[in-house]
Image (cartoon, rainbow, N blue to C red; front, side, top):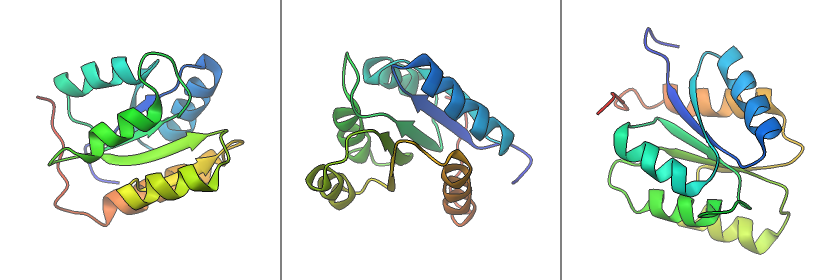
Length: 132
């Protein structure tokens, strides 16, 4: 990775899952921020830009699908990775066709999640995120 670590927002209402994801991404060199739901994530995204957002789908106060759709509509959107226990091919197809970067089904191989995010971010040298 480069001198300034990539910024990742991890959105999950389950504290244990959120912390596990953050620990795995921290070990891979990412700088992570937690959010407990989509509503909090949107507030955080107003204050700071993130290179990537990793979100669960099923959450209170703005679920992950609505968060992903909102992010996809933005001009300078972060990469979007969905981590979910909902195994519905129709839902996965919908999210991927809208432009979500990848979907991981629980239980998640966090090392692979980190590798995929890093590879995608490093392949886009123009991607530059700085705090607002």
